[in-house]
Image 1 (cartoon, rainbow, N blue to C red):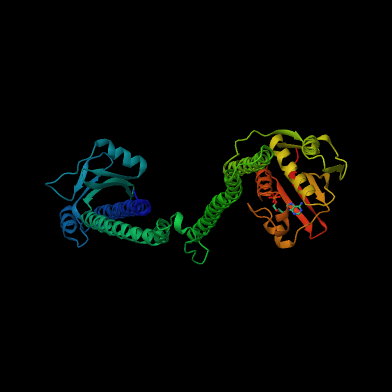
Image 2: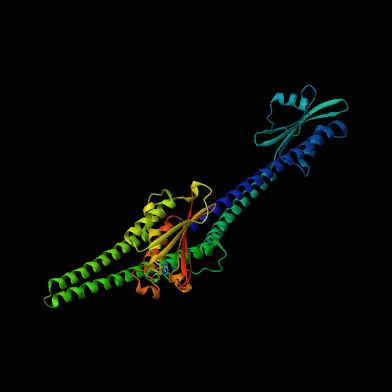
Length: 455
Ligand code: ADP
């Protein structure tokens, strides 16, 4: 069922139930008032009849009957019976018709002085009339024709009122639900036109105040992220193919050179060595590309275990020095940790080692003294590892772009590298819910800091 119809239905059901309950209460209350009113009229009739009978000596039974039948206020099917102390009927307003009552009703009236009950369709009252030492029981009954008709009319009016009320409610419910859901229809129509090709399209955000505008705002944020991810992927593929083409072209020209003429064995040896080093470079590049692609996709299921940062730092340092002995790496504490736990983080040792090796390699590579300095610092929440160098440094705009895949500053062109080390580092640190920051001054040096929450 459409939301619009569901809202209209619920709204109508609620209003219909309220109308129904109110109509019912009105009907019942009005019926109770009418009944009470009629009992009062019957009692006053009974009292008047008894008073005439006992106190007005000029009025005999015959005259009283005539008066009873002909007064303007006579009730429909009205009957009055008067009984003496021995329950003998001493007066009946009608001769031919009888009041149906049970004998014990008379005793009940004598006890309670005032009884209200029913005789078939008619209302019946019994009162004890005490005057001049006599105790008469008067029964009066009549059919409340006027009251019943009024009640019937009220019932018909209420039923029609209900039918109209519910009809109008359903109509209004459908109209207002449609009106309030119209912006969602609009958003739906706009969303259906968005595909991978036009991710730059955005939804109309209105005045950004109501919930539906907020939905559009949030959806636009998601679209923005998707667009960025698509863009990243597109540029990754084009950069990757570009990076692969250069060493492949070098390989091809070396092979072509080898085929040009016959070479001496030493010359062939040199050509083969060149081929080998270019192939190594290619393998390095494809490995890094694969790793970057994997970190961009998902490493979210990687197991995280407690890792001691000093140990990771030392392992990264030792491995790097044994691969590149010309590097010098110094290690120091920024402050003495308050407890052992302050340098323990939850992470993946291999990946964190890779981050530190990349940063250390850059620090030594981009410095003439080939020296990097590692400092570990802690505070109440984070364990920081910063890697400093006194190398070529970066201008502010280079710092901003340093973490973009394949970005290399113009000064870095003379150094070996592909521009994918820092994006890998950033991605790994993000996977550890940490962050990586950079401070640098051109020609003075750089400091990269990895921030990870400690245990
Ligand atoms: P690569 O070093 O292979 O070029 P990275 O992703 O590691 O790729 O670094 C990206 C760019 O950031 C580098 O090309 C360089 O311009 C700059 N950069 C990184 N580290 C440093 C550093 N320690 N000093 C100066 N520039 C750096």
